[in-house]
Image 1 (tube, helix red, strand yellow):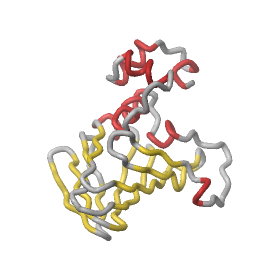
Image 2: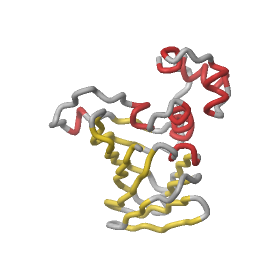
Image 3: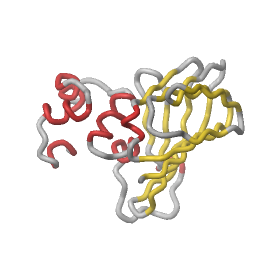
Image 4: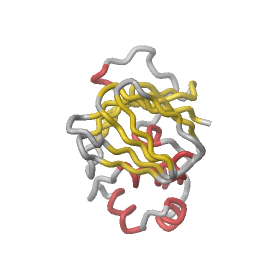
Length: 171
């Protein structure tokens, strides 16, 4: 476990992540499934990306990976689904495909973006992204480069799934 390998107590992680000790304990005991927002806070406390938190990178990943072998995760609160298309310890870029159901919202605190730069590209559907104080309405084919770290929210205002790719550059 990452927390133990660093020699951190639950209180240490709680202070660094702004997630309560009680919630962290439940997550560790697998009594609850954490939301994307909580995982983002925990990953940032560890100075990891969300992808590194969900699927640790292999030292030498295969050059070829079938879709069924790409790590997937579903947010229990929003039903947001992410698939880690590409991640490598040797390459500072990650590619993530996301399916966001109609009406779903997923938010991330500014701290989630301190270690990365990212671009979102909509493959199908509609997506509203709040990046700090700005709100952007994207449709199929549109892309958004995120600005300096700010609280953000991804929202699907449509009546169909929104499918998009996020390219992440680790700093």
